[in-house]
Image (cartoon, rainbow over all chains, first blue to last red):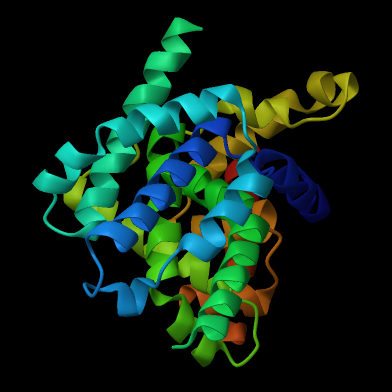
Length: 114
Length: 174
């Protein structure tokens, strides 16, 4: 296999991979959770570093995720359980991880149902 | 930070996210070898990036931030392996990779060669494999790869050359 062929084959073998929709859903839910946490409970924690994501979450979601019914349902379900997770979380990132897991769980439930 | 500054930073992070979600996910997928962990890694990468965005932007001096994002993903992947003390659970999903081929002719004529390349990539040392992922999956140039890997441009050029050379040796029948 000639050198040039190797590079050609590498471009095929390592073709970019599109992220799945469920990942975008997870990002949306997690960032939304951070937004709510920033507003309601976590003011003054590490938000000097994290800043208030309200100004960018929604544009990102609107353009990158879209407003599918499935996405909305996952977010709704995840948000319903937010108080419990907030009570159990040690800090905002821990809360974000818990939210992430919840979003994945809900997305999987939805996927199984479809 | 006042409101206009924050709004500007947030808008810029939004643009960064939209521009590079696919890059980060592609890197994570080829680095780790399965979609499940790649999704976790991508998510965590953007969370960390958001936390440190302001500083990174200040230190970037106007240079593109993609290498910085990939470096975050690289560090998180290293942590993942260290935490789990294991290699990737599964090899690269050949069917997904093969599906990226464009024509029926490719599928017929290139399948064996492609399979050899994929297997060969798995045999490379980690650093060489990473450099190839950045070059061929993400289309990064030498300078970007150097920044992502913390190397000089010259060392990166040598690294890529050796990676391709070694791969060629692996896939070429004796």
